[in-house]
Image 1 (cartoon, rainbow, N blue to C red):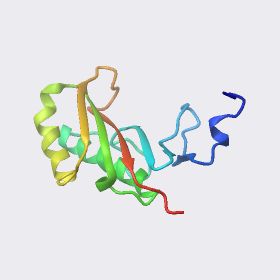
Image 2 (cartoon, rainbow, N blue to C red; image 1 turned 120 degrees about the horizontal axis):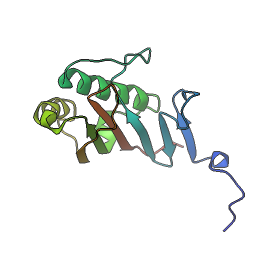
Image 3 (tube, rainbow, N blue to C red; image 1 turned 180 degrees about the horizontal axis):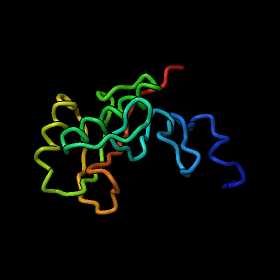
Image 4 (cartoon, rainbow, N blue to C red; image 1 turned 120 degrees about the vertical axis):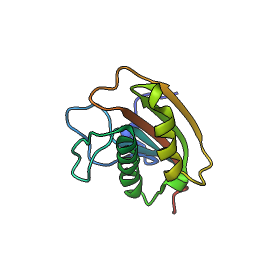
Length: 135
């Protein structure tokens, strides 16, 4: 197997969204028919972090993911996997209520864990969406 070509040379893998120059990853990457969204927190349309209750931060985080997916013409209905990192698992019920409102008819797999490493936010989420590319 030849390892001389970099992943950036692959035509079926490309970044989505504006990369923060201080971070070594992109907001999302399309690989074939899958879109992998990096861990996101609640941000407004200008990329400013939002702070509030767990309900507000959950809704804001999902909106952040929606904006990233929209760049590829993808919606929350295309999401097949979500991992959620909660600062405090005692917030699970309130987070889950908001999550359920946004993913009403979703067919997806999900994991939720407590993560003390989440800094200055109550929640972080990553997602995987499946949407075949139109050729």
